[in-house]
Image (tube, rainbow over all chains, first blue to last red; front, side):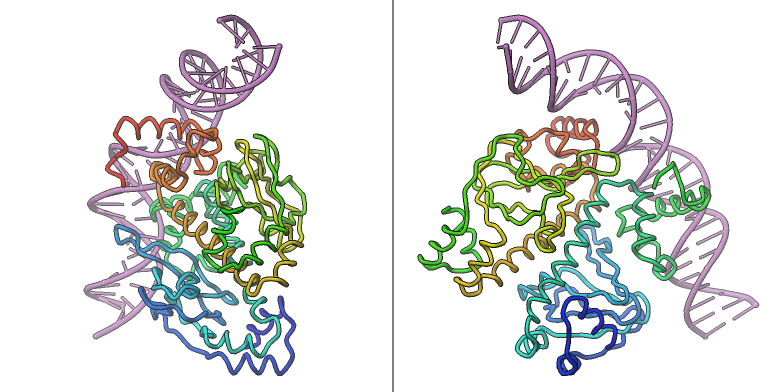
Length: 199
Length: 199
DNA sequence: ATCATTATTTGACACAAGTGAAAAAACATG
DNA sequence: CATGTTTTTTCACTTGTGTCAAATAATGAT
């Protein structure tokens, strides 16, 4: 819970009573590796804050391939924002990559808090937009870089992830095949992290 | 102005007096081809709504290459959201690709309106988030598709754009070189829009 | 119209990445 | 630890894309 408070306080100073309100408006769940936080075609009416562990958001493409959209690490949020906002069915799934602790707030929780904490809604919007902008910037970068640079980028933006999740998920996240990622890893190792003078 | 009203009314019903308030809180500008709507390192304190024409948002990468981030067509918004929200310097530029009419609202205008129109701020947030989600989805798709599919995608999502902007800008938007785009266009034409059984 | 400029296509070649299958390594379970 | 399963690497081969330069085509200004 401490982590959640300090996260929110980056954007909105909280009094003790406000923290209490927040604590009363969320619940703590533990997911085992492979458990789903969000299923396909579920109405996503919740936001999860990863306290510990790793979640992975993905969807199935037209050929049924599992395509990773994001990895959600400690102190990051998990939800399908489109489904959450518009009450539509989720087109993506969120699964625990390892045993994971999640603090969950429902839409109702969040609405309750907006009555109890001044500027709560504004802060929530601000956080959501910030996260989206960040992801956006990252994705835009990915379109214009080759696979090796994308992988090196990934290593720095997703510290300690590379040995905790299957490489095929990283490959789909990077938009390359697993064999290709394997070759890139080899070349990165051999060339002492500076393949082809990149980066 | 009519277009702006009908756009906003997708999200928030407006009374006549509210429309009047909006009209009083924006200004209409005409940009000639090549004119900038937003310069590098400017504080972006405005949002533009394209009434007619085409704007293009881009940035310079580490090697000084002009990389197109988006094309902004009729009834779409132009701004650098990060700079707008956080009062930081813009790392991107927005230029008119052809002669373009833009309805401009400053941050101050928007703040004024929030005092005059109930739910104005919420609607603005909602619109911004929707746009971000849309762009995000699109970008994520781009990472996992090959260049030909991305180009065909582009043709459908950016109707009538292909013969109004230089191909090199489309190429950088798609994350490929101009020669590569040229070859793709050739093959798409030859194969009657169905290259390699794709799509 | 003509010329200069800019945009687009093409060519030759090298390198990057995909494919499908098989081998090797790592991991889990009895 | 032994076995079966999953994950990762490797192989041979094909296709896609980048690079750089040159050839065409389109555009704009005088």
